[in-house]
Length: 223
Image (cartoon, rainbow, N blue to C red; front, top):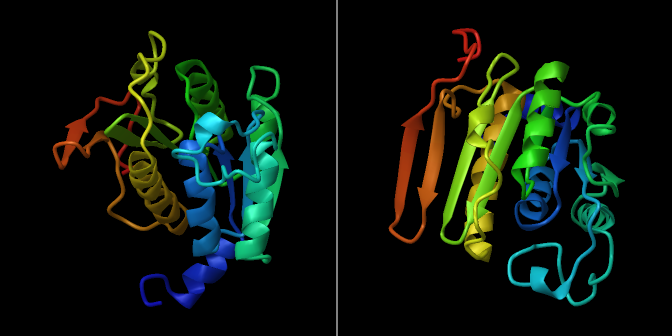
């Protein structure tokens, strides 16, 4: 307070957010949403921690190597704020399970690492009529876009995933911070969110660029 009012805090406690991916982006996002008071978080990831995750993934430590990432997310938030409910889903998102996984949530946050699964999740979010907050990182660079149910920016992820550019912890934390802020604004109905544009973050050259995006079907109501 007063950045978030008591009434808004109560509202957040009733919200349910899906975070797809519990690695570089997802670990930070789950931490930030939990500390901000989002009452119900579904943490989805079919992977386990390996030593190459240690350079950037918040939930990855020498003690969690070999453990399911989604389970570690639940354990972490239980320590930070036991009033937050974290439901771990130790599965990879597929065509067969995506609609079941996304059902019942107020927003879906994309912390995935490949274009194919992003397309599946964004389509499921449109079908479920919930906002989709997407982020991606590569080396010193990151991007964030927020899509509402009538928006479609699938062209951003078509053509496959880009070549690896390395992963840096501060890039993941920066992009996750923006995604978390956008998620909170979406849940509270706050103005000033990313809409109709792609936010490109260049930490190497200390630049933030807002790129207008022609999103099919965007309406004034979404804005």
